[in-house]
Length: 231
Figure 1 (cartoon, one colour):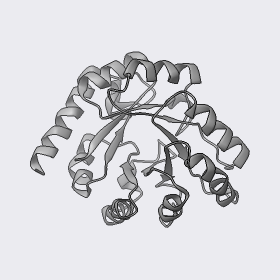
Figure 2 (cartoon, rainbow, N blue to C red):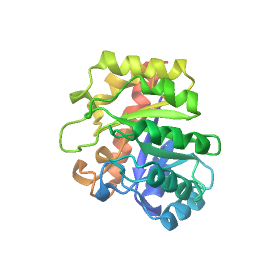
Figure 3 (cartoon, rainbow, N blue to C red):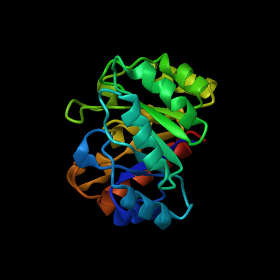
Figure 4 (cartoon, rainbow, N blue to C red):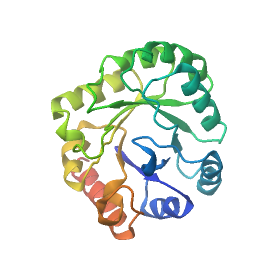
């Protein structure tokens, strides 16, 4: 069954998402880029608050140059907060291959999830490399939150191939990127492990605003309704 991930900025938002039935709590700072990181103290407090009820993931921040030392350092520091998954954006960069090599040892210690960017001409052959290194999951997101959502950048057929490849490689799969309610009946039939949301959960559907109880409830019901149709 496809679950839903709620990107949150603190304990109060985590409580709202948990109450609505979110399957993954994702610690992220929407004011600091596509994968902006929260402080380690905040993430540590979130892990304590969630207390194992659902998995907690956290982003490490945006590293467009993919400097191996910077990325591996950020991963190790975020993993030390106790999160279940550390999410790493894989930006197109000459240093990407070296960065992946450097992450191999950390992939043996922590559960790492790679994020490819649908609006940055992603290399969809990377999941095989990620699986070989030892990553636990891979997802598609968007880097530019003003340039349209996931479906504006990738056709459904290509998304289906991405999810199927991840399944074949035994990687968790996620689809995100300014997703809206209308995207749920399009994407859930592809059977990714989760769909990721932020803006759709917020006041005014603006990702930099705070979470809105009504919007969260509406999205949770939409996910439940679609899941029922697919049983």
